[in-house]
Structures are given as C-alpha cells and as structure tokens.
Image (cartoon, rainbow over all chains, first blue to last red; front, top):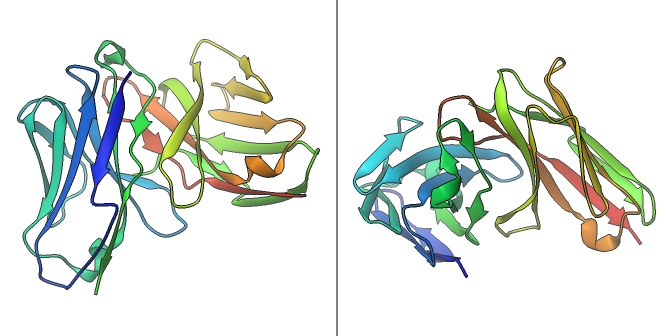
Length: 118
Length: 111
C-alpha cells in the first residue's frame, strides 16, 4: 500500500531562520508531488509541484523553494523565514498512472506541517 | 489563484438532516473533485466527477456537475456528527498537472 510521510508535524521558528520540510512517499513510483499552504480558516494555495526528479514548477513567487532530489522525496525550504510564511503546509501526491496532463486524478495528502514564525 | 469558490462558507445542521454545498469555477475543466478535511488534518478525497458526467453517487454522497453553469454541488444525506469537517472542491484545468482548491465550506453537524 502507498503511504505519505511529512515532517516535522509542528515547528516554531524565529523570523529570519531557515526552514526545511520533508515529504516522502512509499509504495509507488514516479508520482507527481505537490506542496500546498493553507492559512488559518482558508483554502489551499498551490506553492510548487513536480512531475519528476529535479523538475520543479513554482506557482507563487516568494522566499520559498522546493527540491526533488529523489523520485519519492519532496523538500520545501527557505533561507530566511518571514512572518507571512506561517501556515499549515501540506504535501500531496498523484499516482504515476493517474498523472495524465489532461486529467489529474486523486490527490493523497500527508498530515501536514504546522509552521509558526515568530 | 483559486479556481473554485464554495458556497456557503459555513453550514450548521442537525444530525439526520441533509447538507448541501455548492462550488463554482471559472475555466473549462477535465474533472472536479471533492475533499474533506477534519480540523488540523490533511485532506481526504471523497469523489471525482469527470466533465462528461452529470451526477455521481458514493454512499451518502451525491455530486452533480453542470458544466454550462460551471458549478457543482455536494449533497451529504442523513448527516452524522462525524461528518463535521471542512469540504473543498478542486478543479483540474485542462493541460496542466494542477488541482486548484476553493476556500471550503465548514460543516457542523449538531447531535
């Protein structure tokens, strides 16, 4: 069976500090991977997505970056956090056979990482 | 940018009643999906309806899609306290790998 792991679950960071959130998927190959951010009581904002190793598409210009060093690993980073980076970060994947560009299938989400920047 | 917009933003109903929420979107889509999120958790997929389908059922869920009006509705019948959650629609615009989510409808089912 496929699983997705996201960590850390919670973190509190000072303004200006670096950030690294990690997401790994098990039990599948060549998934599409996604990072979303959810502000309190709001919908999901797509930050980055990746269709393969080293391939990153950025949706929103900001001080965050993403990397995909391995097929099933997706990392969200920042060199210097801002107060506005606070939020709930969700990693998600789409199965390899369900990732047709003309028809994106079901997303499987991790449990999220809650970031508070002080 | 958010493609889908849910309505209402919040809904409070008595256990056993039906809950209906709507989603409107702006551009042509390949499919529309509904997700559920319990407080502080990740989202869970509920149902997917393709652009050539008009209605779909899954257990107590009924989804409709009207592509001419660019709208969808999610009906939860005979609601239970455990249905308390936020519900989001997500649209898959053509020729990209992205799903765009709306702001969600928060449903509270009172026992």
